[in-house]
Image (cartoon, rainbow over all chains, first blue to last red; front, side, top):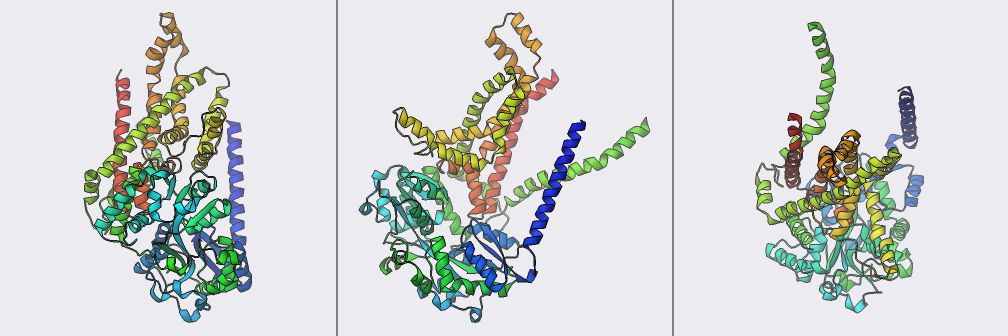
Length: 357
Length: 276
């Protein structure tokens, strides 16, 4: 009993010391003027850390970088309040949703420098007319990854090709209702934003026929599996694809010309922003061609910044996989926020498909 | 005498109130909130539609059946492995060390264990390397029902072994000796004497495994490749993707009800024992 008591005391003392240490560390990192901080809420590993250091040095602001792993989680966190994010980076449909929920602050374009560096193609999108609330950060597409050890390039150019019985139990799909239902809709010749129940049900029927070819419906793990040659085919986003291609030279990315999704991640100022001046400084910093180019090279996603793109190596700039030609760009569709009822419908049909496979 | 009882009563009250506060805040309030949420539609209006949808949709009913079936298989496999293991553990020397080795994996994060299995089962993983080596050739192991059940059972095994082991250790060796003296062979002793006396351990083991297995969701994706869809998957989707908290809560309520039924069914025998 005596030994046990001693043991307990030692543990309590160690824990107390650790707690004190953490407190000290927090104090040290939060040093200086509290007004000179900037809190960024971004996806994990979605900015070159060197750029944060550069920004801190250049402007004197202390950056607090917090991450989220889904648009919905970010939305909930900002909506519930109690947070002080000055900058967030949601995707297109979520920007529309946040706008509707009045969670965003309008951006004063007079305080922005370098918005004209952005390709006009990526401005004034339906989810945010005249970019009143958002500044483009990265953009990308949805497409097919294939491994040239098992699949020839001419065998995999269109969504239709996925249904070929040859690919039995070979395809990995990303676990996202809008995207998977989306390409089934495109295959049937409809819009990815369809709110027509007949079209949706037809697409769901088409999708269920893909079940025998579906190996798994997974999330981030797709990257690891495709690099390890676990499956010959996958459907996922261009951002993920660029990471996979870097890890396995046999992989290739195709955006079917008949149509696909065009997505955006844009910088916004949530309602919770307390340091607006710092937020503008950050947006201007990220709009600078040199910084945007450095970030694009680190992340590997496509930059909407024309001047930054010009600074990228020629091989990256001319990569048609990630900067599709104009003819293909024309058929890309941006997701609209369809409202909870239709989102539910898409997800119900997708869940049925998952149970089917 | 009277004075003493009143004293202890007043002394106890603060302790009890802390206890009630804890249970109220962290057990009763969350359950009440889930029940409350389940009566709201996506448009935040009070409705019974969630339950109507649940009971009339073949998708949810099939999902419920699926969850049940898989939870049953997982529990059965876990029990089949754990009972003999627990039995042999009682026969060993250095029991504490063996028990520690069984508890050890529960200290490792579930996600890490799941990822480790991805490495083991993948096309270039150790199992397939072995199969290729003995001439069987690589097999598709990941994303199959078998691998899902195996991994789930692996994760649950410690929670089954411990209660069974505890009830087996409690059995007085004299009773087993008596059984042998009275002419029972080994199997008869096991089936007629040891098993009935350890039934309470089996019951708590089954409860500890079956109930969480009903709502497994992460390994359904990581190991099952979302080819196994359980109620847990649906709850995750309703809370994280469609933000239809009402429907998610409804499924939660259904799970809680199933949980109570399971508890009632598996706890049935204890009353009988108390009577005798």
